[in-house]
Image 1 (tube, helix red, strand yellow):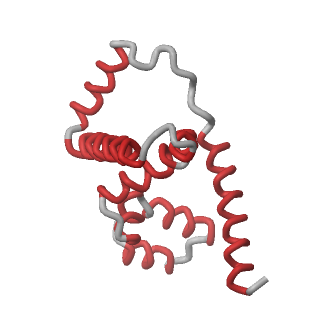
Image 2 (cartoon, rainbow, N blue to C red):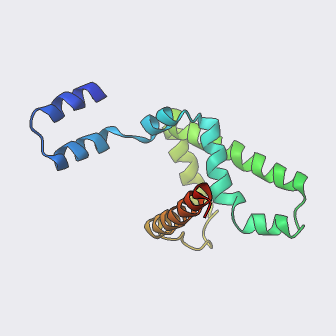
Length: 143
């Protein structure tokens, strides 16, 4: 369904909630990426920055336990692998699922802790972004 078709439907007397639901169903990861002009390679880099670089690994780097060249190599490897996996998920879904299944069968993650709750992480990050936005606003206002 195109944005024009959604607009026409919205004009035909849908409630505000129905319009919102319809528009949200149209907004996908791909349409958002296209609107923001983010390439798959940039998406991989941005995810790696947030998921790996900005965390305990950066703390090790800041303390000199990982050199700049080592950090660059780690980030390059992470970006390449994430980019490959995202590409495979979109272009070769059978192989993507098969490879994940094989890795799980080999016990690659048997002893790993479960991940944090993504909704909790989302809420924490939204709060952080809100605070950062306030800081930027005060900087612009000269406060």
